[in-house]
Image (tube, rainbow, N blue to C red; front, side, top):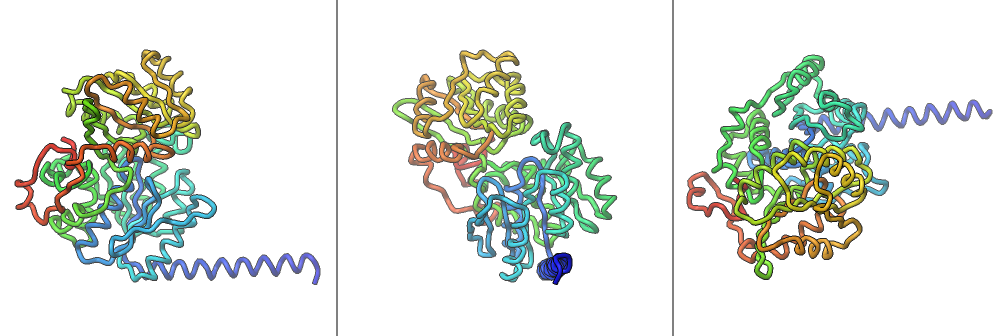
Length: 422
């Protein structure tokens, strides 16, 4: 056989193999009648978990996959297993998730979009997931080096995962026209969550969560569950029982040798808009504390994010000190100084162990302080959260079971760290 003939034979064999593999994947997708593809700048992982929990509570056999702080597959009995990535994260792993969900007999699969570039976001939807229901939480300025350069470009990139002939749910307001046009182009209907619907998520509804959950996420997840036949009360009770993402916003109160510290894990908020919102809300809640400290966890491979946060935070309610951890902290520091922040209040902690980071923060606390982590939960971010959590007051370790109905909620304690931030 000539070299050309051999090459032609191998080529056709590869094409045939790819066709068979595609056919198997499409067959597995058809075995899962409900496929929910979740995308957005902030809140993707939380919304995946909320929708999956609501559907489970409604009696639907549901699998879910999140790529938030830690990549996890959530099984129909709510157990979580880590996702094995021998060669790092790759969108092709969505095929394995679909195959596993089909093998487990899932009626529904709720899956987080893991792509960043516009081309891959579209590929994930059109070839790998083919969702019946799409979800875009919001479109905010983040990953501008890939999806930018403007916030409108971010919205257009996210729109690449809108399903064909399906339904798109979104809580995005500012760039809604972009999503509406894209949904029409793909023959999908759009369900926009209004501010009035978000306002219907009451403080009592939020009090059932063991962590800080955002009303926008809850309203969005409830709308999807309602569309899929699960009533509001049943879905919400399931959401209360759901395990939060490791990067979910939590608060830990420390009484550390006479110094009172409220540590808030906001590391998952890494765009300027979300970060400012939670910083302002937390400052209002803890206005009585003597000082305020922000810990920015930087990433040298996310230089644009560091620049954006450094320029933005100087206009927020003032922080007494800013601790810089992670990598590439010099970039953040230079940008903050240019924006007018007092460089003497920058504390460099790059390269320190978590225990040393903790001590560095303690050195900045006079008698009481609000300490909030922002920027990125990766690297040492999650480790620092656990370090504070493990030193929190003992009474925070006791948690009542999730309420079974609204009738139980009025008797629950309010205001402690186990409940949602006001």
